[in-house]
Length: 115
Length: 113
Image: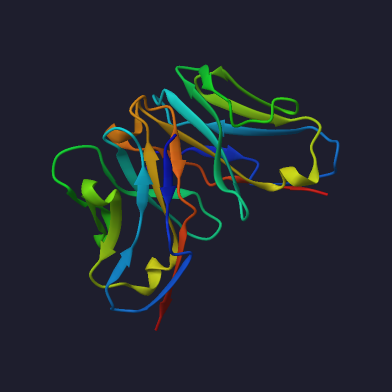
């Protein structure tokens, strides 16, 4: 089965450090989402790309978070500087067009702990 | 703005019993609706989706869901639960532009032997 690959799976970092999370969408998928999952807030949409263009990042704290797709095979989410409240599991999901056609495939997530 | 409510945070059922997980949505137009399942330490796996046509949708692992427009609901069902179904289940709604997938808070299912 085709998979969305996220790296690293786990990351522990100190407050103030830069964190970069990577996502390799399924080959041919043109839609990529980034979500953050916490116990308190559940699944929150951070950013959305279609055909590598960022179409919505209204859910992302702009002062410290940035999301990019340098090419069709790589999406990145950066946090600089990181804070303890950023501790969460970050998921990437990819799809072909809109979700109602084929659904979205999620990666296994990056569990981030900021100490 | 679209939203999804899953009223039950936790549900416990006995193995072999039937299951129904509730989902209510709020969206101004015809919604695109999804159910995902998340096992511990894993990502979300699509169980089934609805966007038009037959309001009873069949999914993987023996799950089905029924779209009821009058009740703004999309409840997930399974006639006989297996221990391996223990997981967290998320209902989601997508807007018609396909650029926002909003999740409910999830329902954690536990299965008693």
